[in-house]
Structures are given as structure tokens and as C-alpha cells.
Image 1 (tube, rainbow, N blue to C red):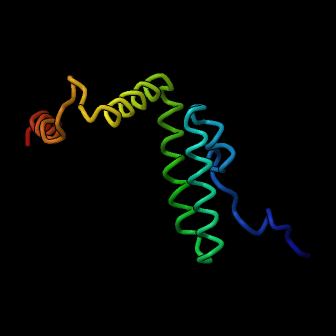
Image 2 (image 1 turned 30 degrees about the vertical axis):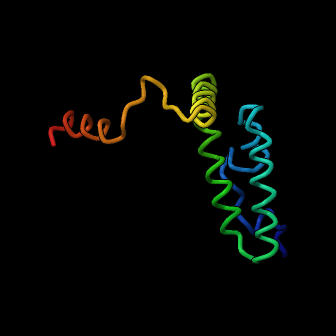
Image 3 (image 1 turned 120 degrees about the vertical axis):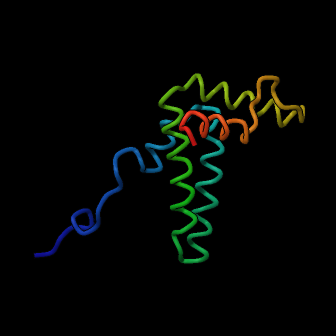
Length: 110
């Protein structure tokens, strides 16, 4: 008795296929996903390694999860990032990473 390919190899967890990831993104990010995915596929074909493809899908899966958690907040973050890159100026309400870490340590009593 032989097993079909689907029975021999485990499938990806729900939501982690390229199609599912792309569907969960904002429309304005789909082209970036397509570009990165195609580049990772080319690299996989050239190197015979799936490492970059897996890294690309993992990255975009995280983006998709954040997007689905709060699409409007994600869209605002993208707009702020674009504005910062365009103008070179940080938003007025930006908080330095060291300040955030200090606040966390303070709240944890460290």
C-alpha cells in the first residue's frame, strides 16, 4: 500500500501557507509579499535550500497575524513608518527603546 504525497508529508499549520498569508495582509502590503516570496523561491531554486523561503514565510506570517489582530492599527503603523522614512523625522510622540525597557524594569521591580 502506498501513501499519497499528502499523507506522507505533514501540511503547514492553518494560516501559514503563502496563499493564506497573502490573504491576511492589507492590500497595500500584498505587492511587497509577492516580491519577497518570489525572490525567496528563486533563491531556493538556485541554492537547493529552503532556508530563505522559510524565513520569508515566517516573517510575513508574523506581519499577517499583527494585521489581523488590528488592521487599522497596522495601517496606522505603516503610515507612520512611511512618513518617518519620507521626512527623516521621528513622530513627536516617539518613545526611545531604552525608556520603554526602563519602564518595564520599574514595573517588574527589577
